[in-house]
Length: 594
Image (cartoon, rainbow, N blue to C red):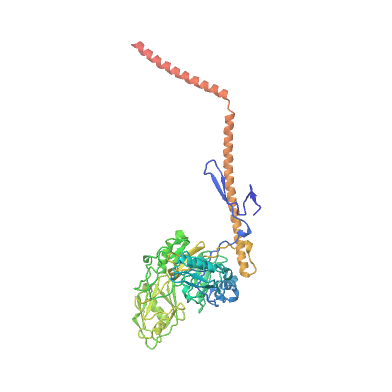
């Protein structure tokens, strides 16, 4: 590749760039040629498009939490992550390693991405305060914040202090740009980032996020991406009793070779929900406008906890309004509530006719000791046409599904029984593994809202960031700042690693891709050659025609042609004279007749 050249232009090492050839006499008669690099370092899989994890859970995987294409992924272990300071077994590094241990069975390879911790909103102080920040158990030098000091200066001090210890922590700090975005922490190798402040007085001045109490440490996990080796879809599931959230994914079937991200699950609430505003979300540098309630014709709006504008349907519609600019499309995912802890009624405990409310529709049930989950499923499904929700028996409670992604509002009153008895009696003592359904809420004002998630897809790697409003609503809506869809680094032939089974599988894919790339370059070169041949043929024909014309001009006998011209002129003049005489003869005859 480095030795192939023409007219001192190297054609196959990528240095030629765009070559423009003049193919005609006019200004626009040109032909552009471009030759890609055929070096081993530039041939391979390229930027792999993949499903990227949520980067939320530092809980280690247990066997059964994650099944990929029906294959169990074993527990993630701390020994696979020698970089993180804390929660090693729950890091993206450890989880990706667990996935790759069964990649020969699943056909799916995991790649570790970055760990990114977005900043927190800064405040100012009226007094001089100082303290340190601990990153991965390494403390910065003391940072002093002056009285009424600008947030810009405070961020700069914080960034400088953290970057001074980056060689020890593996973490770099970036200035978020303003007080709303604070200071961003990044670990390029995907290790966990553990953060704490030395004193409460500086916790809201640094712009560094810490979700725990101000002086306690919080660990943040990175992302990892799943890529299908053979181009097949990726099916993710969890065994009964497993928690797929520990893997930072959701149950579902995902397309191969598509950059994908699914927003985080929003907390269920009976309070007024947060809706996407026009300054909350930025995708690929484009600000997404506010969600509009009229885009959602399915969700039932309660008086308090549910609005149409806050639904996943409205959020997806807002993102799709700028899809031509971002290259990213969105869809509302099916809203799935998995209830557990079903117990039958006590004696003749009755849930009254007004006690259970599903999407604004009252469902009446007389729950007794003989009531089964199947009975409740039938009652709920009788109202599916009104609620948009289908119920099923999951073995421990009820599963409610709104396939169109509408928000589900659910309330239940205690109906004369203890509140815990009432929610257990309808198979909803616990929802999605953690949420406890509120009792005394069977009214449109008190029903608990469950908002679905949003999937983003693109044919290229894409970036998500918070807007000018900062990270508060951005995080509440389930978005996480970062790059999604896979690694931005190319897996090239030069750096293949076949020391592991998963590495060998990836190597085969990289070599196949390299062969295809060379074949495409060969085809492109052939097309260039055909076009050049056509241009040369046209120019050759034009040259031949011009040469023939020139020869005819040069071979002309000017003496003979001049004689012929004179002869022609004499004949023409004689004919004119004869006509003139004929006209004159007629006039003479008329004169004699007079």
